Image 1: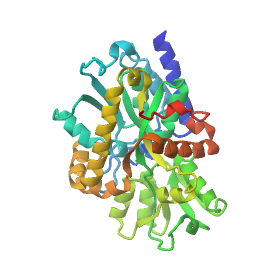
Image 2: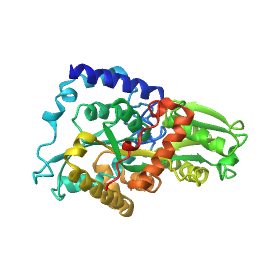
Image 3: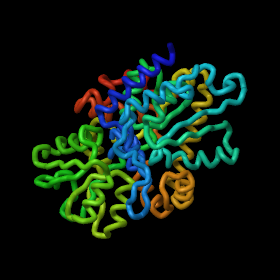
Image 4: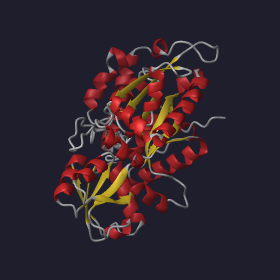
Length: 403
């Protein structure tokens, strides 16, 4: 019976996220994405999708992982099948990490992430855990699309997962509030790339054609919101391509064209043609448009199963501290972090990883700041298309804030 209910839940979840293009900045974004477009991005990816559309590339821009426009539900049938497998549908209680932090026993915290920006902020923690240098034991799982993570979260095979922001909201609704967000791990990873030096702000796009991916997904909704906020929604022609690599290829041949790309596609495109540069930072443009409301453009978030949170609050608290240190290391030690990113198989070459890092907006935002940033972002998506966040806005218990 449990197996059947999980399968139905997965199918429903995947159907909803598929409507939003989910997969980041979808990112990561969801990843979400350019490397982790993301279920929401993928829904994008990392928003490109936006979040975690995680596509590994070499310096020639070749994509070795096609997660770009594949969202957590890009293939509902495939994911439902995963949910029916013994790995995804075994008794959650029997699979709960051994031990309890409340009675002093050791546990193994199982963490899943997408191959992209969201995982870049984890690489230092992964390295420390591998060397036995962490206070608690971790088991990391990295995949190329959100639809590989969701069955594991629902089935109790993962305790914590890093997913595109809107996918977390959809999952919250579909599980009737059985997951909560504990931090924001990646902000916006979308940029406007062109050789046209006249483009300095969103307003300068009036009368132009802009090339991007993810029609009907979070990157599309975000960009249209920014056009509307600047009063030029009817003055910009949008032409959608199937994946970021297509946009990058177009820019290589037509540098005066304007493309919206996620990292690390931005870095690769600019490396291929020195005439190209970043003309627009959509995260900064979002901040301008939302200055009075205080939200931020969010690619990836970290969620936890509430069952695990209730049983092992100390383990979750320690993870948050470890995640914060790991994200800080990634930003402050780019040379070492780039090598770890290559070691983890997220990006193939360290020079590309190092160049992309400053633009991936890796972070670890918690508490009230996390709630304000994420709720405002989800509200914008909801206003464009309620299905993109699961049909309704999540309740306050979606946001875990440590006492």
